[in-house]
Length: 331
Ligand SMILES: NC(=O)c1ccc[n+]([C@@H]2O[C@H](COP(=O)([O-])OP(=O)(O)OC[C@H]3O[C@@H](n4cnc5c(N)ncnc54)[C@H](O)[C@@H]3O)[C@@H](O)[C@H]2O)c1
Image (cartoon, rainbow, N blue to C red; front, top):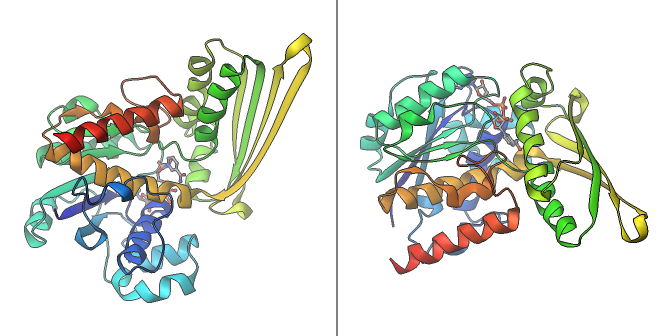
């Protein structure tokens, strides 16, 4: 088994602290690996086990992961208690500090992945971390909507952009199903309320532009025509990290009769995002071990705006993942 280092830009954030705390709970066998597509491939593809993954990263907040996790409140204090000491021992490096080489040496790591979990609308800092990854030959994952300057990453495997966690994931499941049933979608209205730090940024009319663009683009490609498509994000602090989303779909059925769907969802945003980030780190380390370079399109099911473009259809993306893994098992 290989030892894997994961360096996270934005280590004290909601997604990062949920991910690191989740991995600590998995390591101790205190939770089930729910929502982790990589888990069944651990043995067959020699993916890093939870015991063999070491986390580090950067954040100007310089809070321990335990304090960050408590502040975000995604995981309750009781659930965190058994891993409190592990999480209290982990503090971020100062933003931008070049510590990857000593981290790799100190922990005897075979692969170090850099994962971008910076706030939205931080392209300059995102590019800085992408350049650090390229300099140290590290695979890079961009879970944010930020531009990272992908040209700098051509010699390492990379994947992105913008995690497809909740509402957009459901859209990429439902739109192909409506299309394949022959229903004609006249309009799709999506709105959501989010009250965490990310919500503060993405709910801002200018700062949230990239997120709205990523959420808007894919519907026409999946349906084969452009219905009316409205996407809104509202920052609503009382909701915290638990996102509330509504979708209203107006379609035309047999005899031109209206067919309407209303979908209401509520879920902690980071609970959907964290296992996807863990999968991405384990999978992209596999790509690195196989000598892959450049965009890893087989990981596109994890992203709203995958590098390399469509398909956005979740089922086609899922098949691409399975095909790659089948090939990786036999090689
Ligand atoms: N939660 C989801 O479901 C989801 C889905 C898709 C995409 N994303 C994206 O993931 C990213 C992280 O989301 P989050 O909710 O954890 O955000 P967050 O605001 O909680 O965390 C971001 C962290 O980055 C830190 N940071 C700011 N500048 C930095 C710098 N220069 N260097 C290092 N760290 C810096 C902040 O202090 C903060 O702790 C966002 O871009 C978000 O859009 C999240």
